[in-house]
Image (cartoon, rainbow, N blue to C red; front, side, top):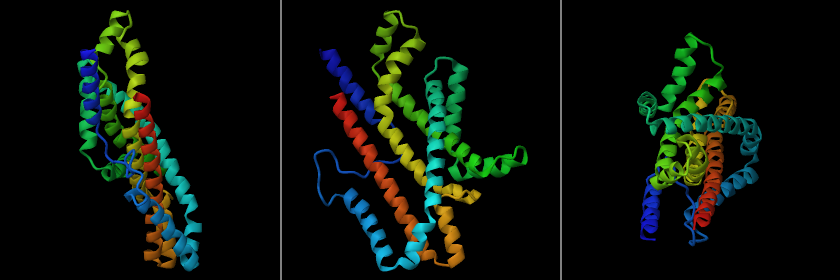
Length: 270
């Protein structure tokens, strides 16, 4: 029993070390303050948008009607990027803990190099530098760059999640006749998923915000559509105010979902 309790405390400490790039702005469990930071920010942004549209439909109403296509493209880029990044991150995470030295070294170099180069530089490099060799469409360049960049961060999250599982579980699986691959597939990874879901959700939120960078490649995302409207009407203040509020509402909404998911997972673990 003592060993089990010690193992559980060790797992809890290791879970806290899993890296995240964004934290959720949501009230802690049990603290349902009506004036919490999240509620003030979220409902304040929605209320301000409604206020602007009602009391000044021109230009704010026209701006909102111009943006839906950009919002859909932003979601398209974000979802495709995070799905591809998860695949890359899984390979990188498994590579980082691999006992095969060349695989471990390649995965480690990938993580260190990619995390050391800004995302904007990677987008430019894939679209312009590699474009001299292979012509890659603008949206494909954006998705590839964001997937490679976030794959490195997700690789570290997955590595930390796997290593947070007590070593005794792998040893027990091997003693029962499982191969290391089968033990990883059927015992370690299913438990890892529960641990890494919250930080992966935070990476999704960060990627949603960073998707605004793809506008430099003429991808008609939310920011690009806003810039197109402003360039036609010269109403930059009004347009960028609406774009900022829409981004704020989106990120806070998904932060809320991530917070609910994390709370539910913690309840299931207990």
